Amino acid sequence: MTLTGWLQIGLILGLAALTARPLGYYMARVFAGERTFLSPILAPVERGFYALAGVAPEREQGWLSYTLAMLAFSAAGFVSLYAILRLQAYLPLNPQGFDNVPPDLAFNTAVSFLTNTNWQAYGGETTMSHFSQMAGLAVHNFLSGATGIALALAVTRAFSRASATTLGNFWVDLTRSTLYVLLPIALVVALGFLLCGVPQTLAGSVDATTLEGAKQTIALGPMAGQEAIKQLGTNGGGFFNANAAHPFENPNAFANFLQIWSMLAISAALLVTFGVMVGAERQGWAFVQAVGILLVVGAGVVYWAEASGNPLLTALGLDPAAGNMEGKEVRFGAAMSSVYAAVTTGESCGAVNAMHDSLTPIGGLVPIFLIQLGEVLPGGVGSGLYGLIVFAILSVFIAGLMVGRTPEFLGKKIESREIKLAMLAVLILPLAILGFSSVAVVLPVALASLANNGPHGLSEILYAYTSSTGNNGSAFAGLSANTPWYNVTTAIAMMMGRFGYVVPVMAIAGALAAKKKHPGSAGAFPTDGGLFVGLLIGVILIVGGLQYFPALALGPIVEHVLMLAGKTF
Image (cartoon, helix red, strand yellow):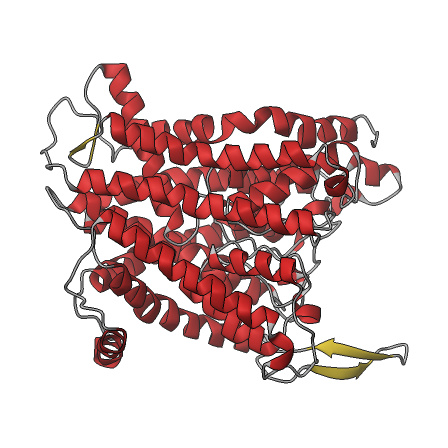
């Protein structure tokens, strides 16, 4: 580890924290329906959408109607994207002449982009036409991110309202999230990527002559625009199979810096938006502190593990001074590869600028564990916020048990119904992750996809279902996931992680919105100070992560012990 590396990590995380407040305040104004600097341009467009769709923006929905609208919209999105992929060969903008996507892969990909996972069991540059990339995948990058923001807004209103029967209008929240937040920021970020050298063209490829005189065909396409929303919407699905390790997607240190900031920007700002909308900005910053501490620790552990090198490679005569550089890009180095790995998995993004399969065992354990914590550091756009609120509810419940008082959070009493629903949401994740993993490790059809045996093979399977259920999308690339077994089971895991989680969360929101809001009493547990931050971190680690320890012990931890002993499986 070097001082320069730590300064790079501190600079990028510090910039994300600095932009959280102005962006958070801007989004609070947007979602409150107040006028912003973009209103003269976008307000007529917004009204036009409502008129065309027959939406009455003033007509709000209860939690069930809001949730059903989200599910109906998601179902329509799945059908449209599946159709695009299955009919790709007959649609325009297909300069490479790619065939239709096979049924099981199309099913997996449609679910993946619908749920904001962007798990890719294919190579983008060898499978998807420009039309599929732009009209299918990129569009859902916007819409899945906007859906997550809308759901977070509904949960936020449960705390800002009292004795209410409604949580807002899903169609209004979806429209405003797209028009006022994702689109304008994505436009600016895309221009930034263009300045960094990321291509944006409808050409299919370009021919080049290598230094040896050989001919090479290099894939091209509309990358800069898709790269922007891929990062901002915490989607993560790359134009290329190598994702952000490819020099066209991420050509230099400036592009890499912009990519990491883009992953953090909206998710971090939404924590501030929450505080502003509920009238308790300090609560939003308490959330920022909790997730910031865990994210810094995660990045630090990965950096330490990678900078320490791999004894097995050192024994072969490789210089350990640069650390473990296997699977990393020299233009980024160990520090920026490590913080990228921590951010993309603390988020639900899944973009990668280094191969996670080549990380050291402890370096690879951290991304898996960060996803297993529930993608709340600060998580996906919207989904990270409502996931964090679930942990906050469990935290005040535990605090109430310790002091013998009815738990409260932001003036709302937390009772048995909310706790049962919160635990239902939290238990969805280990049910899918451990359930599918346990079946996969005994099925020959699943084991046939492994590139490695022993503990690392277990880690590959565990990572696949952790990433799918956590709606992350990154992977240990040694697993050949484009098989009917993995295409179907990871798609089911994605739906469980997205919809199986959010339905009980929305039921919690409906129950809390209907309650009266009580002013904080002298004996109430304060939830905006350091004591709460510490408790919240503990609950995230214990309730969110402890159930995975046996599986992690058999995978990356055993592999780490073997590495130190100079052995491989």
